[in-house]
Length: 318
Image 1 (cartoon, rainbow, N blue to C red):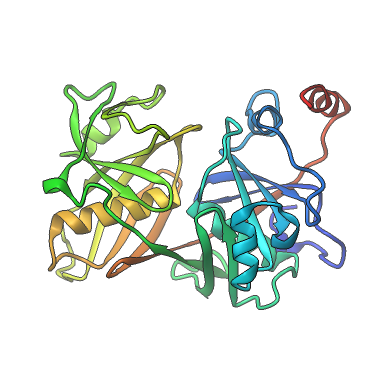
Image 2 (tube, rainbow, N blue to C red):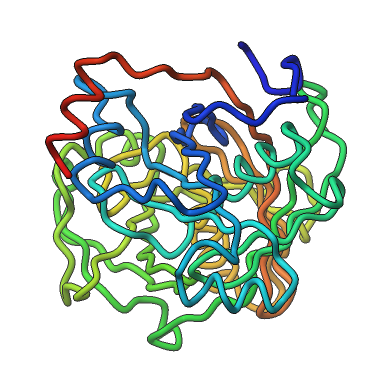
């Protein structure tokens, strides 16, 4: 199966399915009644690219009323039917994943699970995120998914543009980073050139000072020159090290954090729309005061059937 739109969806979705948003990839576990909660070790096994399925994270697709998660109860009260129970590749719980929300909405639409396929409220641990549909401006797919990511904040109130020192292999000295709260924590580091961005070695975790107790996702960005003369639109390149995962090809909340940091540094007259170019593809970020939205594509890739050996290993991890 190449994409869910090409499949017959008169039946329920497969138990396991893979998909991605700009190459930030996920394993979907269909568990509408909340009967298949996995522990951290089982999630890490499934996400392992050598001995499992392989993914940046796992998303359990569960009805809000069946999740047994406090944020899901609140989401149900706000009108959301489905909850995105997101786990990092190491099995740890994450509050949010912007690319995951787009892929989640695509999953719901593809299997006719959304009451309204044009406007989808999705429950997450960072609140309800509303996803709307718009035409793909690149023409490469049917639609793009726009996610209202809600309110953002600078926990250090900007602190003159930096809150944290970030020491990264491949970059000669520690660089200042701006902390951005997207419902999950981010630290954004501005670099001087594409060459410096490429030199960052993200095979091991960068060191943060001060080191946040819950960790942080770290975005490295290069702000591109304004080439078209439109002061409302900017562009930047980004790489990201995600806590609990490592370097990924894209990060949705990270792209928002990167654009918000660039917007903050540019000042009140800076761009309010940003194109964020990541190794996995480009997304659009729109800043509207203290609200921010993320827009981009999503795709489902394959239905998965576990081998008997992998099923046995999963059972041993109970």
